[in-house]
Image (cartoon, rainbow, N blue to C red; front, side):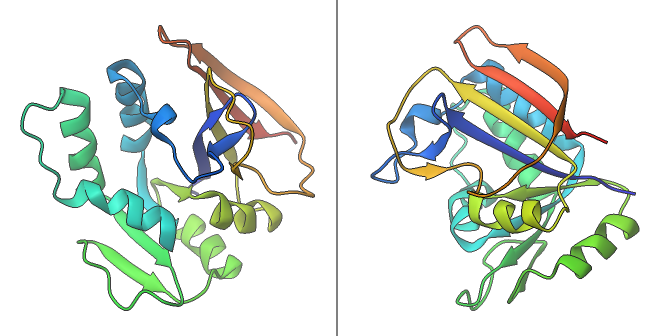
Length: 185
């Protein structure tokens, strides 16, 4: 059975974007990007909200001229992954291996976890909140950046209570810390 994994790059105060919606402070360097690629390579399907999909679809056909190996590698990982986008407004998906579902259906995701060998990734804090509240998320990966942004979009939903078990941690040379948790019990 596949696991559903929520990974996010966050500020020290827990935001994935600042008050203006910016996230330039969260761009991974080569070391962090390579590590993210290792994690992403293990996941066969991305579950994405519309806004996160619109950010990530950049990877479908980026200009990779002069880009470091980790950037080129992530573009390949993205193109080779299946994507399910949950959107009531998106008419069609301009990326390959992508389907649009009009609403997030926890029972369908449970079935997908049972039927799939490769792990699944849930992307975006709004969609992740739904998956977390319905008990579908098995693991969390937080990439904690050494910056405080003072507000914006928080990576976890209000009102959520989960007991977690720390599985791993890693410190990167730029001061980023990766924390890997599983749900306890």
